[in-house]
Structure formats: C-alpha cells, structure tokens
Image 1 (cartoon, rainbow, N blue to C red):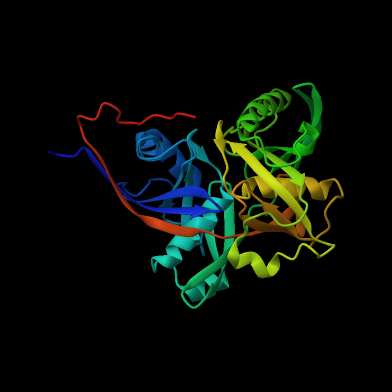
Image 2: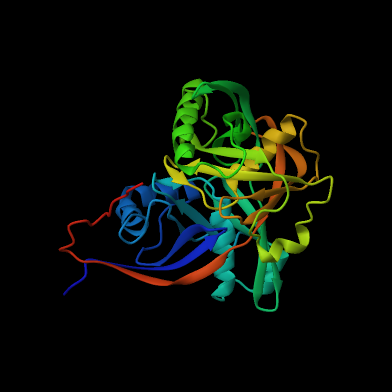
Length: 351
C-alpha cells in the first residue's frame, strides 16, 4: 500500500499542554521573514496542520510547532506555532517545550542553552535560557517580546455579572479576566470557561474592531486568560520549580490560571503568552512591582513563574519586559502516515 504523506514529530508537553514538533515531511519554508514563512506554510501546508493536530492523530487541545531556519543575525532557529484555529504569533509553552526537546535530542548544546539562545518568532525575537543539571533540563526561562496593556478596560455582562475585561498584548492580544468576578472560588468549571471565553472574546473583538493592527496580520483577540488569587499550594507541583515555590514569601503572588485560546482550545499549562499579557496588565494597574514574582498554577496543578524585569517602548507605547519560567518534558518520537484511501484526510475535532 502506497502512502500519500509521511510526517515525523517529537511529542512534548509543558505543564500538561501538548506540543507536537514537526521534524519530518515538510520542505524548508520559503520566506525572508517569519511572517513570510508563516504565510507560505498557511498557503501550502495547512492540510498538514489539520492532519497532525486534529483527531484521530491528535485532539482538540493539541498544538504544534515547525522549526525553521533563522531569519535574524545571531538567532539559532525560528519557530512557527500551530493550533486548531491556524497559526499563532507566539507561544510561551511552545518555546519552553521546543527548547527542552532540542536539548534532549542533542540539537542544542547544554552550554549554549544555559548561556541563552535567540529564537525567531512571528511576533519577534525571544531569548530562552535553560537551567540544566547533568543531562536534565530543570526549567526554561523565556524573555518574550515587550508586553503592554493594550486598551482601556471594558465591562462585559457574563451571565448577569458585570465583569471587568483588560486587554493585554504579549505578541498576541489577550482578554484578561479576574475569575473571582464570575464566582469562581475552587476549581475552574471547565465547560463554563469556553462559554465565558466566547462571550468575552466576542465583546472584546467588537470593542477593538479596526484598532488591533499591532501585528503584521490582523489576528484579533487570540485568547482569554482567567486568573484568581491563590491560597497557597495546590495538590501537584512542578518538581523542578519546588525550591522556588515558597508561598510564605509575602512579596510573592500566587494565581490560579486558565486560558481559552484559538477559539475553543483550553490551555492545560499554567500560561505563557497569556500570563505575560496578565503581567503587563497587573503592572499597568500598579498591582505588580518590577522584580516581584508571580506564581501561576494551571488547571493540571503545574506551576510557572513570571516577573517583570524592566520597561521599554514598543509600538509607540510604554511596555514591560516579562520573564517567564516553566518546564517541559519529551513524550515520544512519532511517525504519521496518510493513506490515500483515508476518508478523513484532514481529521476532525470534537469538543
């Protein structure tokens, strides 16, 4: 039986959020910039995105990445980020997972990763620093693109509750919402999150219509980041971050986080780009000091740490430089085929 397509991939997860890194089956992507490479992929290989992320090979929460040649001097490689809606300009969990996988497979030396490597992303250049001991990657810290509170907050009626919605930019636009205003006290009601996110995203899109041309392409609101103040440790923790997770530190803030992005995808990780947008919003409201640590605990109990390391200007706005530390793990090496007789060549999604 002759196969129509073949793809190889490395499967990883960061805090429970899956990332499938495509390592075989695609040609080099044409383009002088990451945006051009993203456009080339979108025009020519979107069927591969659907096939590899959707069921039966993937699932509704699957995300992906494509490693590209760098386009900027001094940069090690480029990354394109895939989701069920299309392509994203940046992904914090995706960068952490890709760097971890590249170290684990010998494509990135421990010493280079520990010193810090630059990575081209459609949103800009990101620096990643790995914390390694022996042959183990304990954590990866990323310094993403400058982030800022994008617009004045708006109020959205969600099931009778008047909810403040801040808009933060961290390479993508996020609506940032305090979940306690929606009555969340314990675990997040996951089915409700998608409903709330749909309402909030729609309201934010209407508010910003014609005003969110920050990126080279008009991506709109990428996701909704929910947060609420934590009350100490959860039941599970990332072992490699344990020695930094001292919730008795009065200067440290703990947040329970959850995000819905790219339409209906529920983020399993503690955050990434959404958390960086949240950091920028907190800083703009005077609720976070430079250097103050924020611990994010995601819906799986995994943790990550964010902070603001400085200020800068971006897109003619006052912006902050976030730092975000998380962990990732390699799950396996995958091979995928497409039988020409397969009636579902692009898969399907069930939520």
